[in-house]
Image 1 (cartoon, one colour):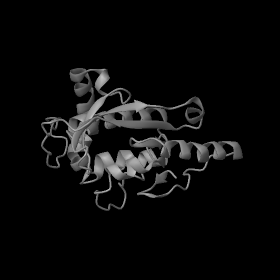
Image 2 (cartoon, rainbow, N blue to C red):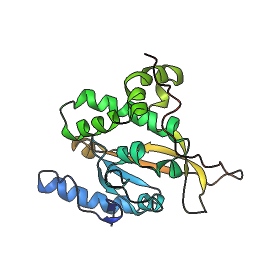
Image 3 (cartoon, rainbow, N blue to C red):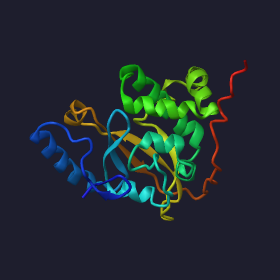
Length: 216
């Protein structure tokens, strides 16, 4: 079975209307579990609808958090969990900033969504993250190019708790079929690369220092 919400057996969330859509997701959970790489289905808030065992295994060493577990909401995990940088390499520039850019786009499309509004309030409580969101993103996107914001095809570093993978890279592949897209969902798979001979050192947790706080 596919797993969701910190490794528990999948209880489809949110449940779509219609028996056929529910049956499709049940079968899709079986397909997801057959994938050897971490794979996850997300809604427009980055709430986890389905995730396979490989996804849960990637984050198995992550400590508890009341609102930012990777099996609950992946955006919250990337932005707010203190252990995120222990799994997601180059956490600020390669994970946080692209996710903030996608969040900004989601807010433009779904500005009245209560879940997105709650995330925006939490961002506002972190002065450096809020400055990055409100002032730094346009400058960063111009500096690195639009391709750095895209998830599909991007190669990003991570540290797998399984030493067979260790400090390595993954390519993010968007594998969203039309039926999932029509339900408002996105499927992302992290295609892991074998650990390189030279291991990348872990970075300590940090808060978006790559985007300076704007001067008054």
